[in-house]
Length: 128
Image 1 (cartoon, helix red, strand yellow):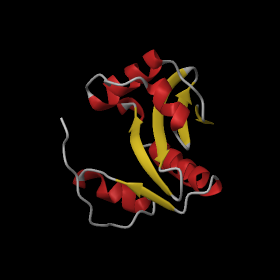
Image 2: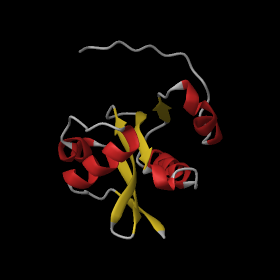
Image 3: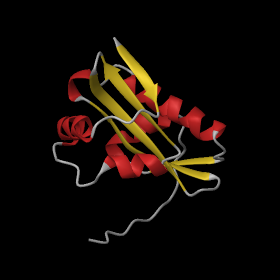
Image 4: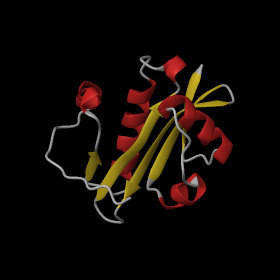
């Protein structure tokens, strides 16, 4: 049975294992430093295994940003990501954010629309 945890601090190795399964590449960052500064984060666990993650970064004011939403491929399309996003949305609101932003690839439009996000124009520039 998959359960959600609010603001846990999973081991770097657990996050790397999930990241590798979900994204097909190794993360190049130390999550412990990131999670200490996050407004919130939500993890999904199947027993003791980390199988889902979403981070809510913020600007210290009214804007929060949904980042790194992922679920282990063997458990995708079971509603886990949607539950994590809904939980993250409530946490962001309860912790003072007035806006929750998310950037995503076009193939995820249907998912994020179902989560209540409206399309907006945005820009991005690669710095490295």
